[in-house]
Image 1 (cartoon, rainbow, N blue to C red):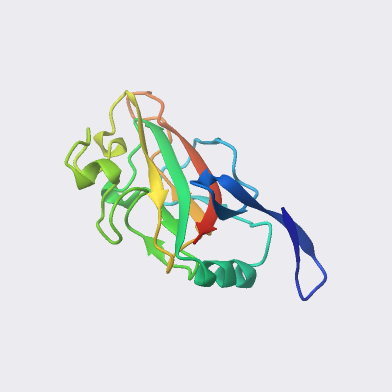
Image 2: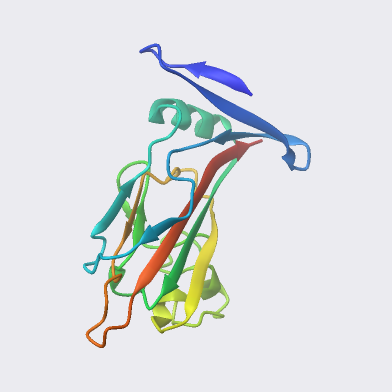
Length: 180
């Protein structure tokens, strides 16, 4: 664990985890939205907005990313009757403010979730895009150093349907981890 102090005198603790990557130290940067969070009552695509505030500045994060060979961040959406990438109901926002069209575990700019990479999704490109009355999940690691970390989460399709069936989601976003 070590302390980083910004130019403005603010300091934060970040951790060097020596056990996570076969003994290679991984720097872990936390944020204010690590807990599983309910999304309910937002119908329009991206109308649910959750900005992510990291424990250190984006300039410091960018420096760590640039000095590392690998970075990853776990992202998960649990859904009940709530779409994800289909009709652009949900997305994440990159470090540079871009709307990203893929989910954890999928190739950059693929328009898919991890299951879409091997055609194993319940829906076409994501499990959540099945949009049925079954709890489903799309999750995986984002690994593109050019776009990490996630700065905002956006979701929609989480209100009651005209038939009175509830639509819900839960998002979980892990710490940013960099190593090598």
